[in-house]
Length: 310
Image 1 (tube, rainbow, N blue to C red):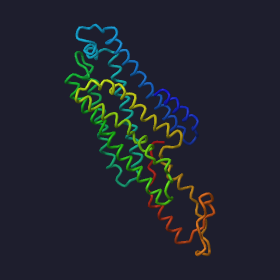
Image 2 (tube, rainbow, N blue to C red):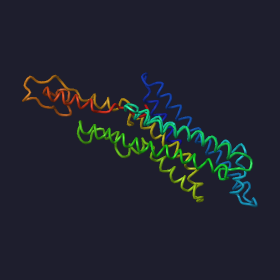
Image 3 (tube, helix red, strand yellow):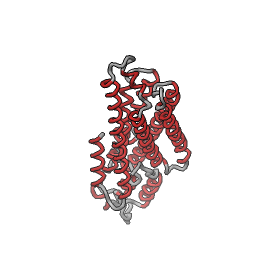
Image 4 (cartoon, helix red, strand yellow):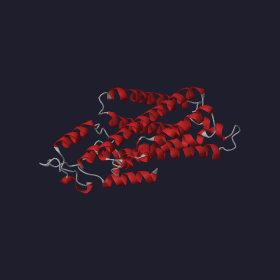
């Protein structure tokens, strides 16, 4: 996480320009904030583990019970708080990217409304989990906390799965339509399988599924995945920001930049002899009148970029 954060800040600093200055500052601030939250959670969690499994390893009921008994202490409250806030920020970025990708559709507000409602549910249930699990005598595994923790994890998981699937579909549609006009292989930089998985936060969604299942069935392996989820939910958005900083992520201007590489010159006077120049010298291409109209109409068929976060 730390290495990726440094890479993000460094790449963002190199790409800083007057046009995107405030946008770049936002990304840098977001990266630093997420890194701080992840580091604090790791420190607080390590201290809690030390208290339970080192300082009080001889506790009569066992260190695991002791760990559950100190959820109301400040060190655990701070750990829970940083974890939930980082989760909110990660889900917010996913929702933002989803909105940017779909907002050029005619009924984009209807499409975005459902994930937005889920996100509100994530905030409400996350806040209730913090309250219920940190009361004296309670923990994340007590009945009152579990009653809200399962909906909290489920809503966060639903938000990630739904937006991940829809964003991957949207990216694939962009790829198919660009390739239909430009030919196979074009725009693959933005729409490869790897790019789709990273930009749609599939890593976060998959890890959330494993964590939720283990938590519901009470499998002891849940402790490993719950702790690791705090890092995964930070790494996923940082991977997106890193691609944005390197100019590889799909943004609002991506499709415009791709299409601007195609320059159509004035049509030739002899339509029978007109032809398309090679891709190395598109500026010299001469198209017949009907072909020019056909290409222009094809451009209109392309969806507006509505790209990801810039």
